[in-house]
Every structure is written in C-alpha cells, then in structure tokens.
Image 1 (cartoon, rainbow, N blue to C red):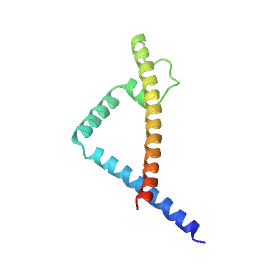
Image 2 (spheres, rainbow, N blue to C red; image 1 turned 120 degrees about the horizontal axis):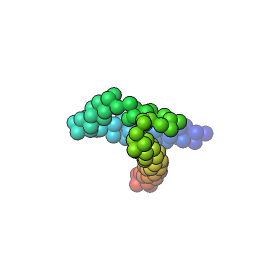
Image 3 (tube, rainbow, N blue to C red; image 1 turned 180 degrees about the vertical axis):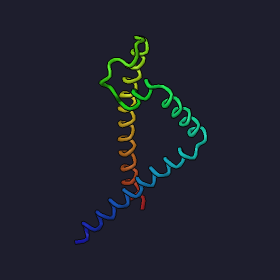
Length: 111
C-alpha cells in the first residue's frame, strides 16, 4: 500500500540530490574569476570574428566560410573537434549520473 509513496519519496530524494549537485557545480564555475575571464575573452572573439560565430552556432551546412582555403580547413577541423568534445562530454555526463545513482544505492545499505 505504501510502496508507491516510498518509491516516490526515493525518486524525489535522488532528483533533489542531482539538482543540488548541478547547482553547486554551476555556482562554483560562475564564481571562478579565471573562468569568468576566459568567458569574457571568448565572447569578445565570438563577436569580432564571423567564422567563430558560425562554428559555435553550429552552421555545419556552410561549406565555405572564407575565401582562404586554410581557414576553411581550420573551420572543418574545429567543427569536428567540437562534435567529438560534445560526444565525450555526454558520455562523461552519463557515467557521472550512473555513479551518482550507484552511490545513492550504497547510502541505503549503510543506514
């Protein structure tokens, strides 16, 4: 009878833990002066250089961003690098979620 309520409470506890973990992570990054400085520099470059904004915004259908072939090759390389980084970040996020959920399961055994 109470199984559903207990399951809901457990799920709520896990959700709250993950939300708190995400908040602490984002807050620590936001308060880091070095991170903020890098973000400001990146923003300035983004606004100054059209090729960077095209790459960051994901305009992958653009075959030619410049008349300079070297810039086009660099653009392609960075585009592929970004895709690779996104894939790695997603896999790391999934791994982190899995580890968190496994640790939450261990907490119940410790109590």
